[in-house]
Length: 87
View 1 (cartoon, rainbow, N blue to C red):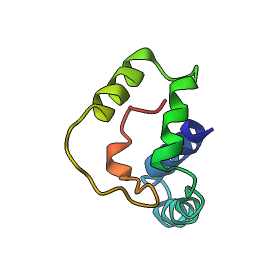
View 2 (tube, helix red, strand yellow):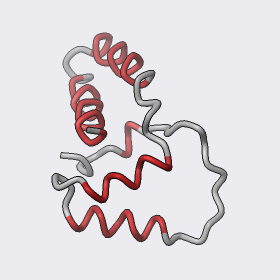
View 3 (cartoon, helix red, strand yellow):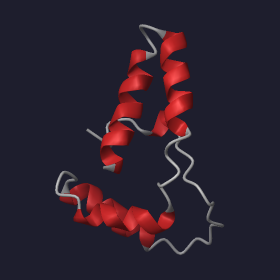
View 4 (cartoon, helix red, strand yellow):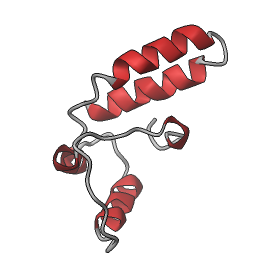
C-alpha cells in the first residue's frame, strides 16, 4: 500500500541520523519505485482504513483547492514534509 511505502521513506529519513550514507542510498533507490503515486491513484487512499478521518478531510480540502497546478506525471515526495502525517 502507498502509505506503507511513505512510512518506509519516513523511517529511512529518521535513520539518516544514525547512518547517513545508507539512508540516502536507500531513499534514492526507493524513490525510483514510487512511480505509481500519481494524481489518479491518490484517490484510492480514501478507501484505506488505516488513514484517519482527519487525514481524509485534509485530502478533500486539498482536492477542493481552486488553485490551478500543472500536474506532474510522477509524484515528487518532499521528505521534509512527511513529518507525522504517515504513521
